[in-house]
Length: 210
Image 1: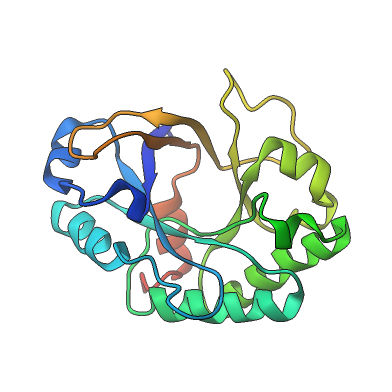
Image 2 (image 1 turned 180 degrees about the vertical axis):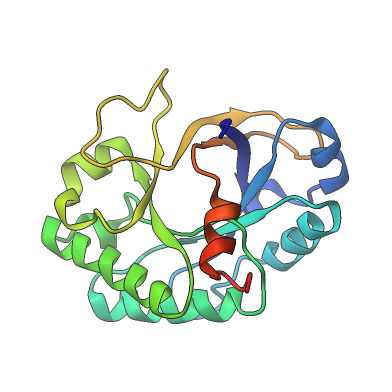
């Protein structure tokens, strides 16, 4: 299949004019931040509005969950919060677990961080979702045991000409954080999908697409 271009957004992009985004022809899918963490007001305040906007103009969507999990118990709690946020929503792209350089995550061992990823992804899979890991190239190489994560898709971020050699194959690449798309205020992350996720997910009957 031809590579598909997309973007990912959260509350930081503010109110998005999805008709303009669609009309621009610059993106054919969108990954929405569903939320972050495990307690309190964790759902991204613009998630519902962004989902409805994408649905109204026929833009396929996926979701991601920004993690603060510091152990497997908190990863399980984040998975429950994520599942509650995405319940009833049809997602043509994966639900991604976003692991980054926050203090709770940095202070763990490589094995502990790897266990957190596996715990979240296993919980999403058991609930009937196609899932995977979002992280930077450096994070994957230096902060995780990638040999234990071969079962999951990878969305890699690397703001270079190519992601370079990686220990795992990747299905999506976030190649810029300074993109410009009509209908979205300010900078926006830009992505390329190398797999036909809508077809894969629909064929498997996952992500509420049964």
